[in-house]
Length: 434
Image 1 (cartoon, rainbow, N blue to C red):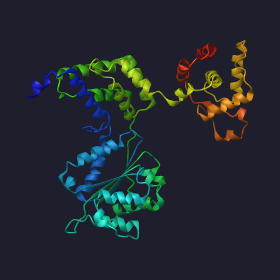
Image 2 (image 1 turned 120 degrees about the vertical axis):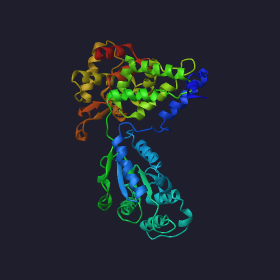
Image 3 (image 1 turned 135 degrees about the vertical axis):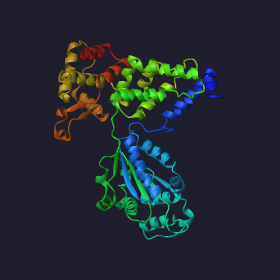
Image 4 (image 1 turned 90 degrees about the horizontal axis):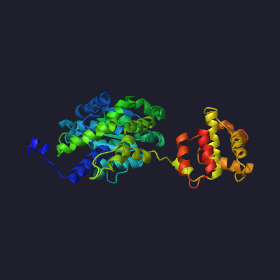
């Protein structure tokens, strides 16, 4: 079918929705790499050049990719490896070994995995080696070409690089970096980590063999870029089978992004976490609500998805507290409002609670001091409050300074959902928050 006919083809609504969901799921679940990585063009070019020198020119290198979780380190590396495979020389020669610090917990397991990924189990056989270095050298020797003149280049990717630094004597890192420094075989070592202080974890002999090249992914997107990402992630391409459905969908995405309530929700997500992984999770929740009956994402869907993704454990734990513990939390929040976030102690909280009791004629909330202390300690165990510093441990328990780890909205939401919450407690809470 010609391209023009394809644009004007009208598929059944169910077919369109299923194709839409399949396309967007691939995009949002990281199964599909972007054509070019966004916002990290310079880092992409640098890493591609480095690995090209190893795979094409036989030059050894070592490099660290550093950045917080969800910054796009693995995506950058996968894009570079995909582009590298387009080089005929690299595709023919380059061998890849992928290790992960969470899986390869010691050097013996790592060496077995290297042997397996290089398909050298038959060559290594039952040979007994004196040391790790001998074993690794033997494996790399086995990769020499038939004429023994040159070895095939090997790329070692070490995910969770900082965990390899915890191995005994850092033998694996020492030997890999030693090979990359010497002219034994063309080897590229790429470490991926989220720790900025990773070089401090390396022993002196390991550090001296590392090239000290680091690629940092610390770019912080603006809200406009974040909103642009929502549009590109949800937008349908021009080659979508049903042209009219694609146009309607893209128009609905534009309308969605311009909605004020949607902008508020996205800004809240942006302020809590700027990484795109959490954004993709939010969009996946929205996508799951698209059906034939409503073939677009509405603001209500995004608000519901946001509520689900923000349903934090602490707010849920509030529903299981006793009335006394809930009253103590309200008293703490009152103190926070009055003293503008200054720390408090049990005595201050108890005094605030007493003020509430004095306003009430009945004494159903009259608790003894030890009972209140026990409830206060339970809140500390649940990490709803925490000590300001460790030195306060020497202070009497009643006078230890604490901070409240909950915000206004979490407490108010919990009060609304609390089963059979007494009316006077709700009234006290609303009078506190004004």
